Length: 607
Image (cartoon, rainbow, N blue to C red):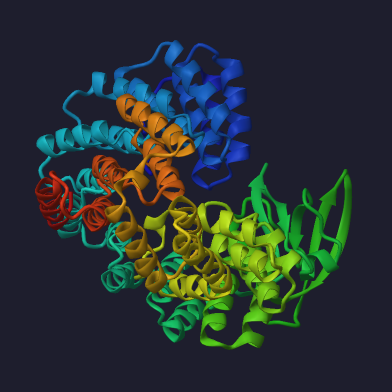
């Protein structure tokens, strides 16, 4: 990001302090710049432009709330129009960093009031709207930016992002494509095109897009992770490992294992890698490094300090540090350092090894990931999977349950419970996974799911046998109840057979299709939620009703319509086909088939 440079006239004393602050700012020593800008304000407290520069220094130093306060003060004092626009722009950016989207949007609108024909202001406003999940407004702002500047690649990018979030994939593709045509050298345009293909489960195309981003930014570790993860979902585990190895190589370095930031002209230790060279030498967070190998670090930038600390493994570097007023020399022996951020890499590689059948390698990588960062979801997931494979079920459940919003973790968590004989708990966990999350294109997830369903087979058989006994005695309601239970944890082949049995029984005895009271409660709640426009919650209510009474055909029909409102057309089609299977001769069967045709067309359009 760039800052505007606007000439202002300060008092002589303020100007001297401002000049020193500006020199420090240009060197990247923002803490020192802040100090000088504050002194300039003491000399000239009524000049808004000095506050603006103070805001810039706070912003660059990562002190976003202080930046907000400084920019607000700048706007409350005398200033020219350019300074005002610049202050509003960076105030909005500071709010963005704080995740405060409403004030960011309001500040962005102020920029537009000052320069109503500035396309960049509209493009930035589009970004704020998109971050706030106001995608329609984001689309409107991006389109206005494009009207003002037809080759505005960033506006096309924001337009594509908004369309992607709305699952309007064709429009998203066209917008991203246009952004890339205008500016093919922007790496994150290719990344988001990859994310679009990823959302559509077209992993091969996603990989090609991610590879283009890597060509532009080969050192970006996240791009290599994207490639590896897409290969994993395709079941191409050797390719997964090769891609993640590149990421691990980029994350690994030879040095002392610290993260530092410049404060008041010197590097200050902000983080010490666990069990790394710096920790072994007694370096602590907060230590100010005033010399490296006898050379003063004052005025250096972060890159120069970092390069001085790196070197050949086994060599030594002497740090002179200041701690609580005392000066101490510390000799540190450089080693190969793997930072905690590499936990995701080792976790992903562990899972790839696991699916290849290389259990020992999987265990080692899982342990490495967890040792690097026990709070990382990939570390928890891989270590939980390793515990599962080692029959350490309690430990597995403990870790996997901490990985939230993860179908793959829920599958393994359910498996660990089932292996312990806790079938009810296992079934509850398994049934909590949205059906649309279990795509057949996700190869490792499907493999884990099939392994779980194998564990469930004896329970499914028990329910089916009981159903047969009840049916032979003419106790059809009881038979339907047992079949409904069997259906919850059956595999695909058994599911089809059980449903056919259920639907055949109900077609022969229509009175059996009466909605039970507990399912009626879910249906009524769902109907009210539909009236409120809360379709996600309504879908959940109808899903629960179907689990209780899978023999009531109309539940599938209504569920299909709700999923269509959510634009989840594959699930809508699946539900409507189930309705037609349950009631092929229903008066509205033709209308149901027509809805499927419409939804298939919407899928083709990418709507």
